[in-house]
Image (cartoon, rainbow, N blue to C red; front, top):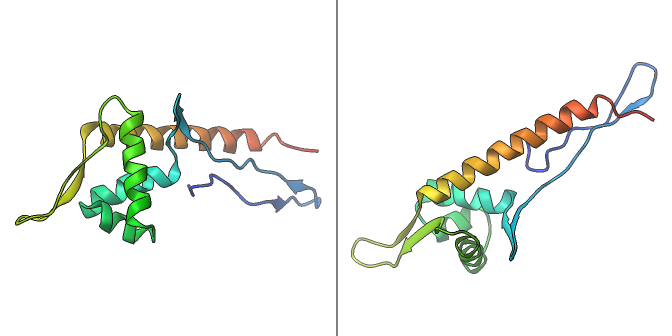
Length: 127
């Protein structure tokens, strides 16, 4: 499923358009956006690369923006999603916490549920 959870408009045999639902969603806390597609992708890239800066580069995002997103997610959660260490002899890096891993899983499960609903509901959309 793509990040916008969409399917294309097709024509039926009698030339009547077949409509499909499209949508995006966010998980919010009282302070604002907690998780969305881009934030979850950033978490997945941090897990893959072991670094906020490398994750940001892989997404063509500035380090500053990635750092701000990580700080925001960590602030919106009771437990941090990402921990980081500064450079030095062993080098710096960032890792996902168990909470970060659960956040990704939760988001992907909800994404699948919403996608399934939209696909099922699309079958009954007609004008």
